[in-house]
Length: 459
Ligand code: SF4
Picture 1 (cartoon, helix red, strand yellow):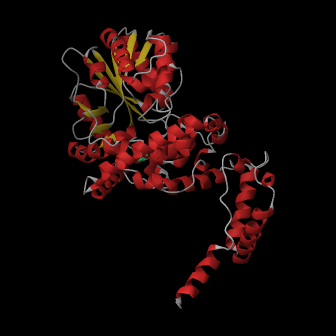
Picture 2 (cartoon, protein in one colour):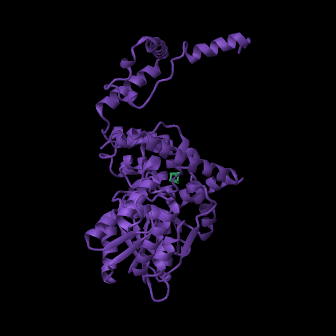
């Protein structure tokens, strides 16, 4: 389904759409305050971008270095070409250890590979231990945001969900009460788990270690109690040196939630005594993106979510309208790269305002890539006829000054006299969610000339 179709339900629920918009803008403002508090912020972004570009240019070498060093630490390293192979590998490891119950900390890669439904189909109990992830898991829906997976759900709805699944009091919506209930529920699952699965925020080629960032400490607890830890990692998560972490850890939490640092930045360097550690390195289309000069920079993403929090379309249409593990501006590039036929509407869910590019901590030129993606889809002949014709018409209009001026003047006059029905009717989708401002009496060009004349400016 297209993005506008999927967004319809969310947009039609005006109070939710407005509240979602405000909640994410609040996070964006927190991010701004944090960024402004670091005088060298722009240097950090520049450095992070340079490190990522360098790493991607040498990715095969760094991956081999990582594998060698991780093995030396006693880690079992696996390679998966796609999501299916990743799921098979995880399943085999769990089988070898006779695992029945798994606790999992937040990992967008496992969402991308649909690991949970796969494991559940094979008879495992899989519990997401991040609070937001657990809420969406209990509601049987996907996360709507990569950092704030349950941002679209109100506390009253969480209360209903917990009443149904965890037996909390009916009608309870106090966040402290609900969090306490979730804590007790998860504690039991942590204590009875046979294996812990985590994602990876950063892996270090130099040492073979990796870092997992959480705010709830659930990754630590999930892998400290069971004797088996499986870490699932996209191959782009690599950094060359341990010292690079100093740059990325400062950028990640500030960009994501406006915190100086995530509450837990857990460093893993090999298994604990008596336990086993596996890492699954997953390609799933990444090496194809790496070969594309146009889109390879999208692999530099550190999944902070800042581009989503600032995106006016994402904030108003909600994460589920992207039908992808990674929604928002970066998802609108990564997803159509993998499945262009089913996600060709995503790069058009964008006003090209460039706000995503401004906040991205690794300086990905997101809005340029979104524009390039439209061309990519056009070359693949995936744009509908109405889109192509309207773009051709606008292109002709904007390329001829006299046509543009005449059309502008005609529209200004017509909009003053036409009945409201002419714009706001069922045939004009544009008018469904928007209200035009009062048309000005003259064009900007005329107003500018008049202003100059009045002020005596001869230039
Ligand atoms: S593209 Fe940039 S802003 Fe968006 S999630 Fe990735 S790192 Fe964050």
